[in-house]
Length: 160
Image 1 (cartoon, rainbow, N blue to C red):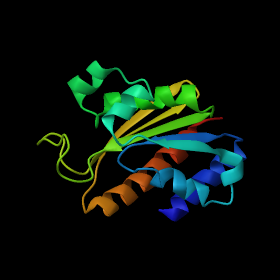
Image 2 (cartoon, one colour; image 1 turned 180 degrees about the vertical axis):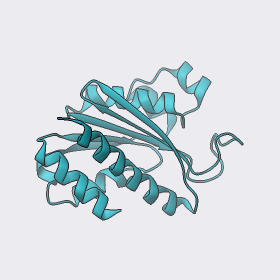
Image 3 (cartoon, helix red, strand yellow; image 1 turned 30 degrees about the vertical axis):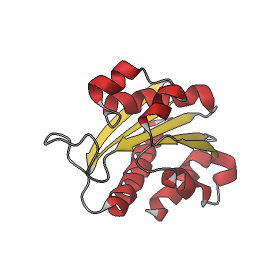
């Protein structure tokens, strides 16, 4: 995981891009990993943890009906979190993460525990991914962090 984060931070620095995070299920861990890189001062703008659904609405501007219809842990809400973050923290890339790391949330047969959603708003281009991981809460979060770094690396490689 750390190697993927380090590679991602280097790629961001090489392209002179900044990144900000809004995290629910990962609760700031993703942002913290970027803070540990050598390029943190060049690339990291900041992060917001909005674990509770009410913060997704009040702080990030996610419409309540969207949360009611799709649940707080959904691609639709994650996309809106990325969009909302752009209004709070100026960065070239706004990354949002939600998901289910333990029982007791909005899990269903179609969306089991381990389902994680990542959205990255790179300038005006929104990239959304759904992942399904296994393991305990920590393992799911670590896999999500690694997958997010990979997603950003792939997206950065496609930019000229």
